[in-house]
Length: 433
Image (tube, rainbow, N blue to C red; front, side, top):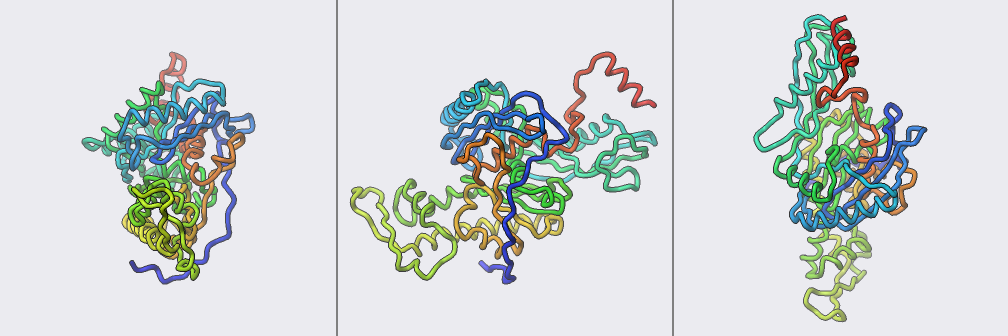
């Protein structure tokens, strides 16, 4: 495995970003659920009068019934989700009927589409924008997969490019560049059935890397270009941001749990003790004292008082190849996306697995970019337990549910909302004047 020889100095730490919901205030309380391989978290919040969200309730449970982002045991997953949501509901003294859920299941894929929409010289209306999005959704449909996000990146009205909102502009043809994120339909149906058994509807599905980016990237990083890498327990997600838009996402079925399993197998110990070794003594960078420091390791099947002694260097040598493999895959995915230039020179690591000592330095060396560790935005009412990188996706889900990260806040891109006679008359006149 050849490392990038260029030396990249780590940048100074950047404080956690502030969630921006200034353009849209959601009324009432709302809930989000982050379903992961190693943990399940639920947050219940509301947007305060100053436009910032406040956490009313928090629940956390060890992940069960989920592997690599997909539900593999629906009974175990339902039990864990019910308990987690119940904890948050009791703390907030509310009952949830619907929640925003992270999308990690179904092998999510990211694709870009260009759509042309005839306007005929009149002003672009909401129906035109909605028609472009629905046209992209139709083109993205593939047997066995369902689009989750159809995100307009930018528009062009005739020869005028880089238009963020084309409504009211006159043109002959409206061109749009769309980012579509889809997933396997069967996995989505399983997730929906799981939430239904928890007596919850899925209000919105949000790509997990997208959510992690909302909570861990500062506004300038989203604007100038950055790649967020969310290193979770069962998966590692990647999202490329530029021009305040998410341009690309990718997901690997590799996470911190794989490091734990590597240690358990390599040292012939239990998963519980392997996790403890990783947490207390794990590192991806060797030090001169590693050979001399001996660690007690209980062997599988042996009596508790019978311990083996292994040098710390053995633990480092087991961890390092798996982390190297992860960043090699990320580098390949980033290169194949064709967005290397758009992604800028900035990488933000988040997720529980990024807290392993030496990960930041290895990422900088192998990706050839500036790297910092990202923490979720500061949320009022959130316990200190949930303020670390492991809860970036949950915090990002709350930001999305509150209104952050959306291009069009004042219209429904999915379809025309129900309207009364007066509203239909106003729309009729607006489109023809």
